[in-house]
Image (cartoon, rainbow, N blue to C red; front, side):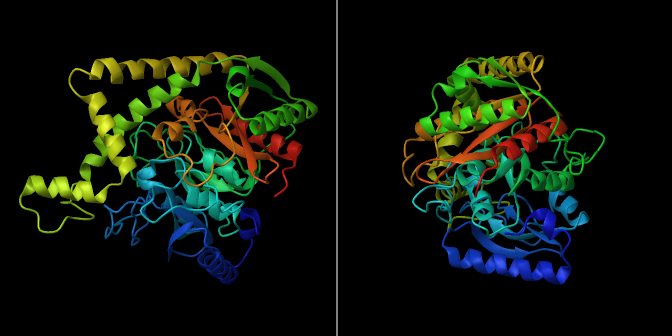
Length: 448
């Protein structure tokens, strides 16, 4: 499979041929990673998650309620891509409104893991990760609210990068939880992730949370020989599967042999991260999804009796079960009598989580952590919502703290399923993160 770096040297005619071959493979594979084969502009073809606006495309967020909606503008990341020689090519399947960890909540049906089609690819950016892993996309854009880039990348054996909150504009991203969402690349290797990240990042006046910074390129400046102090979280690994523990041990050994210093730390029980995340995320989701009412855009119920019936039936028929569950939970934690007990308390715990990371980064350059407690589960295995929520236990704290993190494959288990780990950096330390990730990638030499 041609890499992003290699594709950048191809002519427009060659790139068009490559794109057509990728589309053909996707249509024949049965992975259901693509839900549309639209194109926009010329350049290196990049698969786009179905919640990022591309002018003239049907952007649905993997939901029934947005059937019929056509995007009237480009998201800022799309404009930045086009300026840098990349072109949107195809829509990637996803969990409905990015709410899920398996891509099974999609209106279009589940995506399959290319390493074992009886297993999920992860979520919510499962279509993006499965397509890159399956050789159906050179690279893809995903979005990460609580691990939705890193977790499917780990399940599918590719690289997934979540930037610092504010580094990449959210303008044009269908909002799930506005204080947590970030767009980022899913690629075949660390170098490609840096290339695509450089292309999409930058300050945007249309996004009030966008950070102003010197836009220095990462690609071309990665130093894989840089020696770093890397913290491992001992109590995190205790609850992981044997497959993940083995990969964790291999990664630590490889990092030590590469000259890095390993220190050992503990952090709060992940159950506090999960509780905090799902209170904050569902509260913001309930507010953000109130706009989908059957009036302004998207699907509308047939023959409503009155305005109340229009709202009720359009939303009941348009939203899937997981989205309804999170809207209900979000409205509950924001309701009178529960706001102080749940939402305000969650915000206080969020600050404690940030402070915990700051203490570790006072001593360490990076943190090494699992991405998920196990390899990709079987389709239908996580029917219990609470079990699905637990699969994000290692990723959600990073979003709550607004930190950058990158997932990369370490090894495969006895069934041939990829096992990925993540490196985490302090806010706005992307350069340091890519230096460490490139070193780890080289040290473990993961074989596809």
